[in-house]
Length: 90
View 1 (cartoon, rainbow, N blue to C red):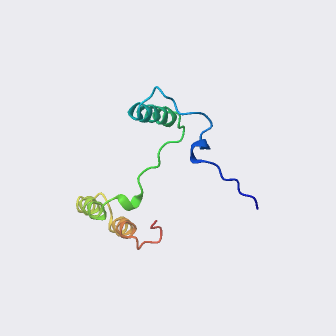
View 2 (view 1 turned 180 degrees about the vertical axis):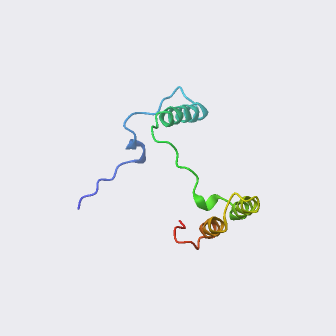
View 3 (view 1 turned 90 degrees about the vertical axis):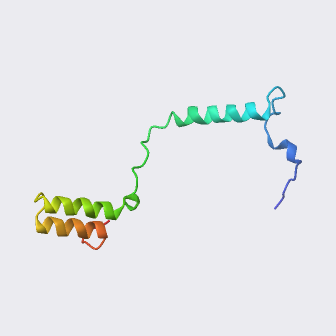
């Protein structure tokens, strides 16, 4: 196999602009990145379920159960799902 080595300076397809400072170039790059990010059509992913605090979820379920909103079966199912031991725990 043939490898062609070339000087480091030749990797750019065009010369660097001589009238821009490093800070101006970085600002320009950030501006271009922001413009590219603004064209995204896919919504960002929702936060993962693992990021939720299980203690808060259990406290909320306990309050709903104590107020009579949840039955004993619904409470047990929801608690098992929060703890990850239920049949439909994800």
